Length: 254
Image (cartoon, rainbow, N blue to C red; front, side, top):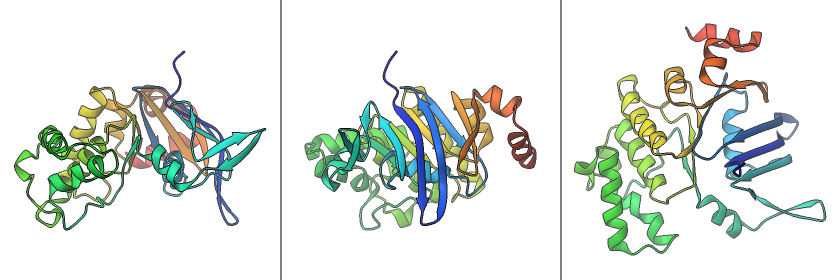
């Protein structure tokens, strides 16, 4: 058995008195696309942010490619790692947010090549060549010199995906990447994500796009109230859900 790309073991997360994650167990295999679905407030985005230690787990353990995230273990006790070491772990995990978070004073190409040059020490000429390849992959080679304000929301999100991929991550996290887009722009972003999946990228995706989950996901996980209610293939969870809560959620979408 290969090492899971993501392994969550009894993960809990509280904000003060509010327990948002209540013992999440989740396994994502290398090359697998897992879609997290569920109502707002169910803990999906919090779980995603715990995977790259943007949020610190309250209890439990999270591993990415066999490495404990955010902590080191000694004699059965967990000790939080330094911010420098956490940043090193994050460099292998790409993340795309609802909001595009592009640098407004940098062009599309400059946004993409900034981190490979500054964080990974990639030669600027090589970074530019790779950046242009990635812009072509997302259909935006002609927008290399455009600033974010000159791009539509869908174009900005595609640049954000290319920027994440430029770091050559082993894992991509997507937090409702189409929720801030006009409906007619959603498809162009989902097409880029499908292409990434087809290339074998491991992806954990929080989404309300059920057709995307149905077509692209290997695993669909339905969360509600901070727990995993049901998990399985898209056919199992979306077409033939076993839990009443899952059925009620899906019926509201139709």
